[in-house]
Length: 220
Image 1 (tube, helix red, strand yellow):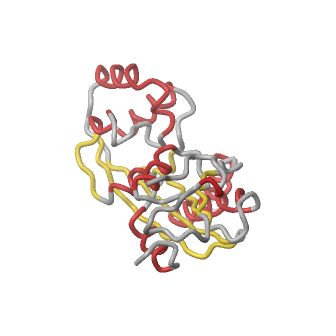
Image 2: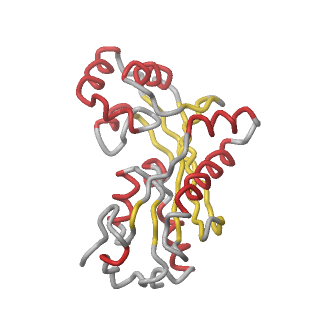
Image 3: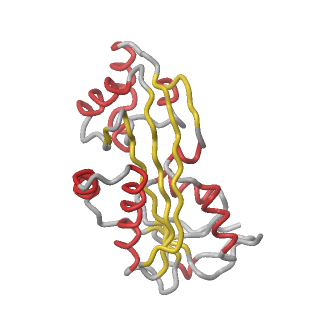
């Protein structure tokens, strides 16, 4: 079985037996985790990185008083629209966004290790929510979306543990909005999880696959 590698043209891909050759799928994301989830699920796709200032967009939505679920959906749609013009005609563009909500505050990906430390100190001993939206667009128009929420309780770890964790993981923690990856050493930070595993990783995968079956992109 041959899967499309990231950034290869559509013509080089042989779709899996359960995926129809048309329309092509495009993942509007630079996230290796999201790409890995789609690849592991057996999808043939290409990726195009969106050109979106997420911090600026998030700040604008917060200033407008948007609900967190709406903000995640709109940010995902913004990412999808930013690549739609570069996708092959008729493509289904998949885009996602995840917002970490802590007592009403929205936390962003930390800019550096000092910011990651401050973020983890805020999360320590508290429950936060990961609000994750995925949208599908065709020709720049949203044709489907869903939002899912997971809750995580971060254990009251020591400062010594935090020092060791940041030293081991380094800049890798900056790729996650929570400064942790649950599929890696970040699992040591958490004492309880309520919600879907794929949502925590940044892509509500199962409803997305169901939609692709409805669209006859995947065999039912």
